[in-house]
Length: 116
Length: 115
View 1 (cartoon, each protein chain N blue to C red):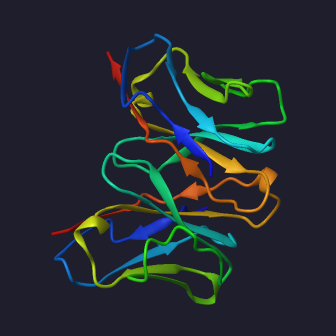
View 2: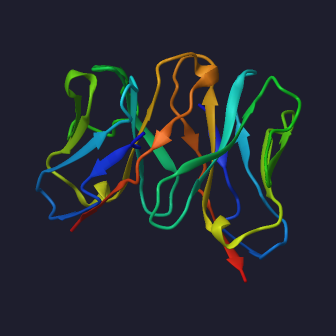
């Protein structure tokens, strides 16, 4: 079974530009999460999809961030326009839909974003 | 809101020795889950061990075990017989048993294994 994949692995952009990150969850996983780790700090939750619906987007920092999950499969996270403080590692995770007691979130390798 | 604190940014241990990574958390909930995730250099984060708060017995997974102290809100990870492959960033995480399924992470502890 293929794991969670993310593309690109690295991205370097200038302030004001747009960047789109992509996450492909494990096949059959209804839950998809986005997290972010700013350098040296804790990993923070951004949002949670159940299939194509946003279940919880309480962690999205501002309206420069737009997440979509087309057809309940892969997801994209667009940052437009990017600011210096958006630099960090963006993680995607997925899990099967089920009771919370049995849920395990499987993480992708992350996308390292650097905004100059 | 729940918070997770890892007070040790870096730890090191000699190969074959035992090391304990600390984690404390704050919550008003009585039912929740705690996790330790491991992220090796340039590799994906993987789940090491989980603990369900309603279970008094400490979870174990081969060389990995936890010391779960619910009253003290402490959840430390013990790695026995440390191996070079254990070198990684270790994250402690909390998840509520009700409502939101998001993970709340600590800052991480970088573990180095000395040969």
